[in-house]
Length: 502
Ligand code: GLU
Image (cartoon, rainbow, N blue to C red; front, side):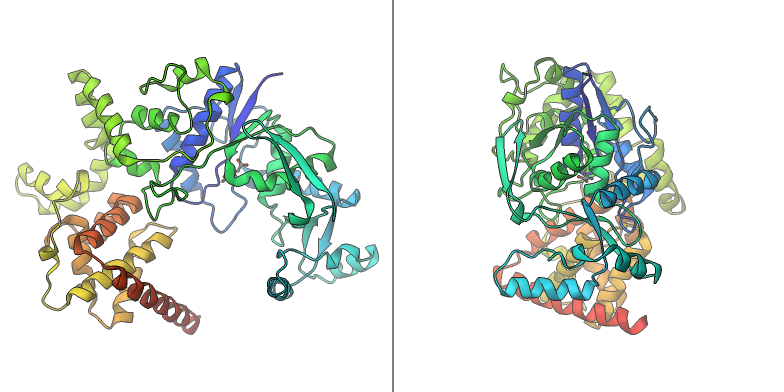
């Protein structure tokens, strides 16, 4: 048997360090077995997926020097490797499940499902589909489909019994079917859900081992049922421990930069970041801290993976990065500086901003210092403003920081709209709202245009800087509570505003 592993990112945002972490372990395990590593783009969430995000993920993984044997860009014998290009395959398989009585059409409206959920919660039950449409007659189903009623396809789940499976790291796991919902497999837009697509693709792509984050363990019963319904063997399951913030919570962009782009932009070396990810839940038999993915592959063994939630700690990563930087010879160090900041891509984005404002080339560096490196130190005094009191300054940064956390598209006009909305809501001048943001981002009161700067820096660095500004301004617990409340009121105001317009 040839070992085949895969990474299956959903291209719905910035490339996440968690994706790189899972990719590393999949790559290492495949290499250690002389197997193949596959990349599949799981883009069935039409609204949230984008090709741009897929490109960014592929680029970030390439930057980390993780390569795949098959994938949307390189092709392979089991393609296409983008789920949106495999819809027919999913439909065929959904029909097979329907024909065998393992799935059924469901016509329940979102309103009915909401009511059901509320009633179940009130009765202290697990929310889940109650099976109403499971017992419809074939004639009725045909009649309703022909009448054009919106419908989905759901899977059957036994009402009783227990699903048993083995996780290579955790041993035998049992989950009662009563906890498993009759999962939607095909949505009303005709797209499959993750659960159908993942099972069909893992089988057709001959995946032998599924290494992924532990947040998917509870989905295994659904997947196992589907594998059984189709009469297929389930690949071996290996659920890796989740990366955590230093406070033990799941690594999240609200607390830690999670985009690989952040780490590239602030000057971590790809091999240092990858090495660091290799220490998450894994240690080399000789306990050495500096190693590469080839070293890992030579000695790889699931038994060495420990399940205690590994902490993703920036200080530790910086220490490791320093080791790598200092070990470079001067030539390579120069190359790194060049490729980190003075690369063509960065220059192409900076030149339109600085050219007009430059009389001597020497003027360039002071203009872009906060874009290429850290911004100057912040002090509370830097935020003093004629038109804003201290409370307003904090409120502006707090609310924008929260809005930015929720954004999917990081584009100038979207950021502009966020600031404009907040200015309208607070009854302040647009210009005045921008002032503290300007300081938070650049550390000064005069800098290159704000929105261009935030786009250049990217979402993670921008959001980190806003959070740091709040820390410098010293927000008390009480103040934070007040702002949480006022942010909620702002959200309600925003929703009403959107409804008024539409
Ligand atoms: N598309 C899923 C994700 O974004 C893949 C999960 C899996 O590996 O099965 O994480």
